[in-house]
Length: 188
Image (cartoon, rainbow, N blue to C red; front, side, top):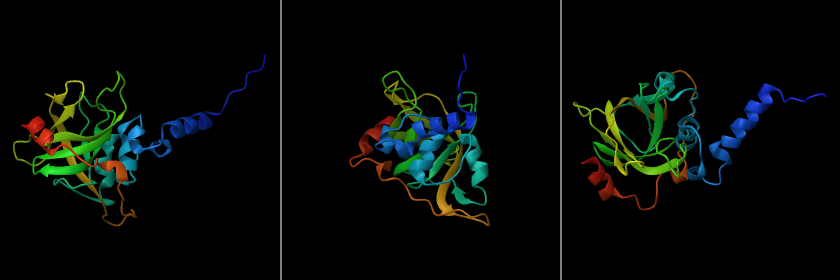
């Protein structure tokens, strides 16, 4: 009996196509990892594990510690986040509270990977510099108790000598009526 196998490159390509945010009817229909989602939502063209985005952005995109709509917040690698995490700022509520749109955080219908829009994220760092955050967690229906270390924000503005195009955010980045009051209640 002769078996036909597809080359590994074809299998990987088909797997990427099947999970690509660009293939979903809406960015918010995406189910998968945070990295491809953040790339599609922010327009920032960085690849690799989430925690590597901060270093990769050096010389390509401007970086900082002030949240701005469309910026990607980069979570450090930690015991809870082995590959880090990236999310896109969808609303700035106060200097210490933002809403993010991201994928692969909370479970929805018992499954990880779904996109979530306008999720509360709060700065809990002692210096008010966004180096430590808490994130709203659907499974608890409130702000999670874990504190996550953060590198900072990558802005979609080219920086340095390496070529990078100005990033453009996806139209689904934020909802029409985000719950600012709910975000503040969640944070405080």
